[in-house]
Length: 142
Image (cartoon, rainbow, N blue to C red; front, side, top):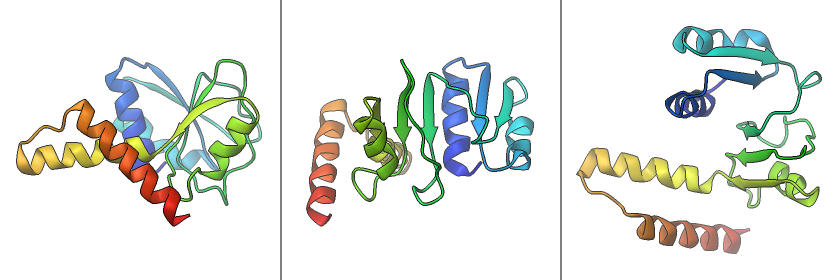
């Protein structure tokens, strides 16, 4: 229900999603999402009652995220990137799921901000290089 969750819903809405389920600690946290995205059906589920969905976006730190297990066909985007790999994503992958961390999301955000400030576009090859450098730096620091 924070800024990253809002950004994820905005991106999904831009891609044509009409129904999004938010799994959060309490339902009151998503009232503003429903207000901000009136053309999208935003429903809430508690962690305990969560049903499987094709795309899972985790915005919570590992310390407060309940253990989740991948279902057939699910993909996890764990927006956390430190520590690398994020514990929730590492467990998900260990159990056979598919997913990625939030480093590329962070880099795309940085590239978009750089474009706003400088007017210069970073191409896909440069972004791939930046991603590799960031991953290398994080793994060395760990």
